[in-house]
Structure formats: C-alpha cells, structure tokens
Amino acid sequence: MREDNGERITYEGGRLVVPARPIVPFIEGDGIGPDIWRATRRVVDAAVTAAYGGQREIVWREVLAGEKAYQQTGEWLPSATLDAFRTYKVGIKGPLTTPVGGGIRSLNVLIRQALDLYACVRPVRYIPGVPSPMREPEKVNMVIFRENTEDVYAGIEWPSGSPEAKRLIEFLNQELHQSVDMSAGIGIKPMTQRGSQRLVRRAIQYAVSQGRRSVTLMHKGNIMKFTEGAFRDWGYEVATREFGDRVVSEDQIAKEYGGAVPEGRVVIKDRIADITFQQVLLRPSEFDVIAAPNLNGDYLSDALAAQVGGVGMAPGSNLSDDVAVFEATHGTAPKYANLDVVNPSSLILSSVMMLEHMGWHEAARAIDEALAHTIARKVVTYDLARQMDGAQVVKTSEFASAIIDALKDGASSEIVTKEG
Ligand code: NAP
Image (cartoon, helix red, strand yellow):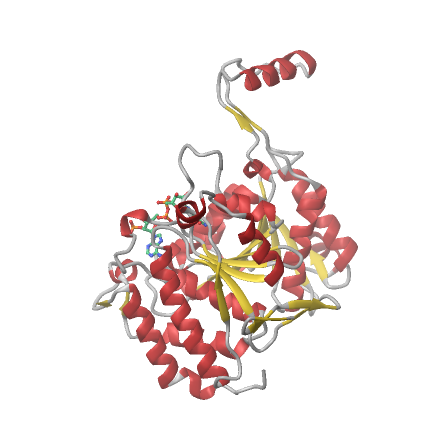
C-alpha cells in the first residue's frame, strides 16, 4: 500500500513482502539514544545507497516513546507508536529510560507485551580485532532466543507488608500448607506451555533454516520444576513433535547413533542455567543457538556480550509472528547522553539484523564488512579503545563516518546491485 513517498511492508502467504521504498518507524530513544540513532541512520542510508544505487531507499518515520513522547504528548508510550509498529511490521528503536516513580514498570517490557514480541533474538558473534577477555574469542558464535513476555517479567509482584502480599501469604499458608514468612515480598513467575513452545519453535526453525549445529534449552528446572523444568520438557516436546526428522537429542545420539550426530540434524540438548554460565566461557564452541526463559536469557545476553566487546557491541531483535522491532541490548547510559562518545555498534548491528530480516542482504553485508574493517584499523569509540593498545579514539559520529568511508571505498565494490 502506497503512502506519502513510501510503501508498507506486508505479508503475503506468510512471507514478508518488502517494497523498494518501505516505511520503517523508528524510536530515537532516551539518553544516548539520539547519538547512536543518528549514527545508525547515516550508516544504513549509505549502505542502502551503495548496495542498490538509488533503486531502494528506507523511508524513515519517527514515532515517539520515552522522555521525548512525554514532553510532546504527556504520554510515555502513545498508542500511535504501537499502531505504527503493527502497521509497518518492521521498526527499530533506541534505548528508553524507565520512568522512576511512574505507573509504568518498563517501557521496553510494555512494548514487548503490547505487540506480543515473544522472541528476543540476540546474536553474539566475535568481530576480529575487538578486545575480548576470551582466550579464543573466535569460537564465540551463539544466538540467544530469549522468551520475552512471561516469567518474572510479567510484573506480578507486591511489596513486603502490602495488603496484597499478606493476603497471598495467608492463602499460601492456610490453603496450600506452606510456611511463608508474613513479612515477605511476593513475586509470581508464570510460564505457559504456549509461551515456551512458540519460543523454542522459533529457535529450532532458525537453527534448521540457518544450518546451525545445536539448540540448547537453558533452564533452572532442577529447582523451579514446574516453570523452568516445564520449559525444558515443553521444549523437547515441540522438537520431537514438529521437527522429528530434522533434530536429534543427546540421548538418541548415544543410544541410536553410536555417539555420532547424524548428517544434517540439529542437536537438541538442555543445560541447567548455572553450569551454562561456566560452559559458555570454558567451552564456547559447544554452544550455538540457546533458547532460554526470560530472566535467564537476559542475564546470559549481557554475560555473552562481554565475551565479544561488551554491550556496546550487542545487537538484538524482538519478534512476534508478524512484527519485528530491532534494538540495542544496552540501556540509555545517561551519563554519556548527548556527548557523542558511546559506541553505536549495538544499534548499527541491530540494523544489520533488520536489513537481513527484510531480505536486503547486500546492504547488511556491506555494513558488516565496513564495521569490521573500521575496527580492524583500530578506529574505535572509548569503550573498545580502553581495552586496546594503539587505538584511535573517535566520537560516535566519527565512528559512523569511518564506517561510511569504508563502505564507499571497498565493501560496496563487491555488492551486486539488484532490482527493487
Ligand atoms: P546501560 O544504560 O546499559 O549502561 C551501563 C553501562 O554500559 C554504561 O555506563 C557503559 O559503561 C556501558 N554502555 C552502555 N551502552 C554503551 C554503548 N553504546 N557504548 C559503550 N558503552 C556502553 O545500563 P543502566 O545504566 O543500568 O541503565 C540506564 C537506563 O537504561 C535505565 O533507565 C534502564 O531502565 C534503561 N535500560 C533500557 C534498556 C532498553 O531500552 N532496552 C535496556 C537496559 C536498560 P561504562 O560506564 O563502563 O562506560
């Protein structure tokens, strides 16, 4: 559908249809958001121009959320913003401040829940030259699928001493024969079969379609048997029922295949959360796609980001069955707001994921290569520079300019121009 000077991205027969001039809504974000967004937008526009020579163009449309929305409309998250993501199917956002003392728990959580963005996908991949605490960082290549709508993030909790907490504790103690201290704060951890299985299904679909080696179900099911333990069981169930001939469990490998993974199968395994944190450090090559409940996935994302340069290098996407919102993993880093110093790579790499999602692979590859080239030249922002010898420290905007120069100089020359 044509609007203004752009067109809507649509779905036809379950497939994303991307016009030559798609309208893509963006939220600039709070704190460092405007700095990293400006840098990202320049890089994406330059890559699209380099890849398609003016035959394709993203028509950016700003939508409001966070402090800017509150100042302009009196609302933290206007419904028009959610409507825009629903209408245009693909969007991108900077980080948002969680308003202190407001009625909203977290704008990010609210966006994910309102749009049912149930899968948070965070690739963790090493770019040569990035400082890393790992001995062999090139072995780090994982993709986390974090459940995004349930678990303790559902926000069902009451403070210690509140009437609600007391009522619940009385119920637990009297009706269910527990012995919870009356002074406890109470939080609820709901996890459903549907929520767990659609996340695991998405992770396995990705692993199968991308030729990945394994999907690890990460859980703390030895302690939280009916939430995290159920996540594991429901995960295996969906793997067996829906992907029977494409996957194989560790148990099957041992009993039916003499210890060898049969050709073309994705290994489905599970690991308890605590040991996962050790093994991703000591034996990273044993992990590929990881499917995790909400809180485990959140912790693991930042821990893994540290292996490949920190949160400034960590991209992400939030997916429903039809809407995709791309965002950096980190927050608003308020002490750096408007100083033009932070690393925009997290949002730039999120835009690479966005372009890949749109099928604009040439532009995505161009950015990937130009970013890697810039880092290899040791032209970096402060966060990477403080861990490197002989780096040239540049501002956020200068880092973007260096990527754009690399795009124009080299990376773009290998790109095949396609018809829009
Ligand atoms: P943060 O904003 O992620 O910042 C923590 C630290 O991470 C920064 O001080 C900085 O470390 C480093 N960092 C973050 N982004 C960076 C970048 N682009 N380049 C280089 N270094 C970067 O976490 P926070 O201070 O805990 O949270 C601040 C606000 O953000 C809160 O209101 C929180 O609710 C919100 N938040 C939003 C999102 C989201 O929108 N998705 C996610 C998380 C948090 P150094 O000081 O060591 O340089």
